[in-house]
Picture 1 (spheres, rainbow over the protein chains, first blue to last red):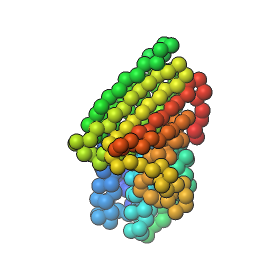
Picture 2: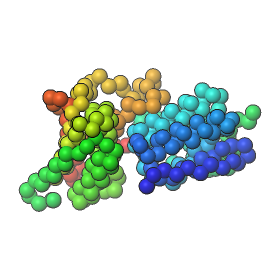
Picture 3: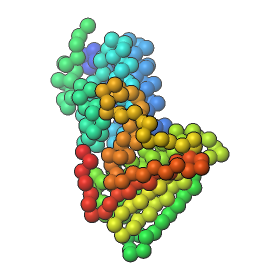
Picture 4: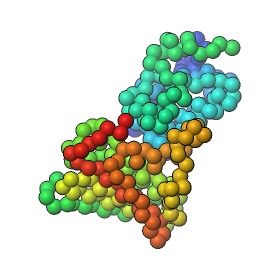
Length: 116
Length: 146
């Protein structure tokens, strides 16, 4: 039920494959810790694959925003990949869809990051 | 549920995330039994979850001495869910607009907005102490919030 995160590297971009729920007390803290861990290791170009995220609540949405601003503040970038309809709709009504760079194809998403 | 007589179930729960999950699950089952479409079931369950999170986290602040009360009523034409806490009280008019440009990148403050987006009616009542939220979904007039 809880969230799982697997991390992999593709052409210098860190892809976080997330699955499960991102909610208060479940995935939110895991996501925050995982992003902090990546930043501490110097990985600042992050693609968050949400294709297998089944549910996200307002805490989860807030965590996505916090991750985005934290990465941006450290000179990196965080983009979203493969939104489910539920997550897509939630980002639409909260007006966050235009804040995030949302992608639906991994290869073009990886290619879209600015290279150092 | 679903007959001519309204049926109400009330739970008094401790201020924990387990209680939040239980309330969410009950709302989902109730909405499904009422015959709502999957999308509406999701919206009702999420709105109730957000109300329960508010009660447990912001209202009762996980205080083991304080309780959340959740009641679920299925009337002939509506689902009525009431979530009450024993906290300091909530003034809904004082909440910042999460869609305002200056608030878009805030890490919190979207719960009440989502509740209002997903339910047909939302009412706040101040208790002594605490706050009660009444969430209503009209049956047969499911609307698209998005």
